[in-house]
Image (spheres, rainbow, N blue to C red):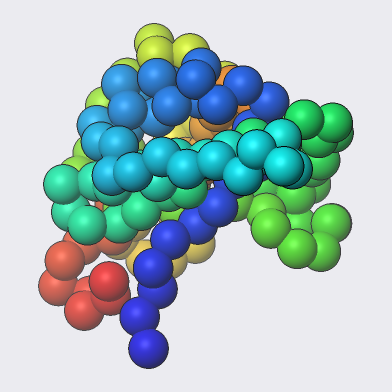
Length: 139
């Protein structure tokens, strides 16, 4: 079994698509709509092959908008998505410049030898940045 993608409900699909493609260097793989449900989405793909599916449905309401990862852990269910990056500090600054909001500044991670930071996308969804060394064998 392999992980395929994460789906994120957003308030404005066009705005979210622009943000994720610009800020995270993702590309549109395909778009879809189910007009009878006033529902549409777009599947984004990274050069590394991971996918993020953005979903917009009329009448959706905000969900968890935690100010930090520890508060997010007080609510069961989706808390954040994690992205392994080459340099947490550089990526953190770039995402803030692209419109993300700071949720946890870069610092040593609980995992030895790693640094970690958290930002939120324009809809408040938490994104973890982690610079796990490739030698750890994790994917």
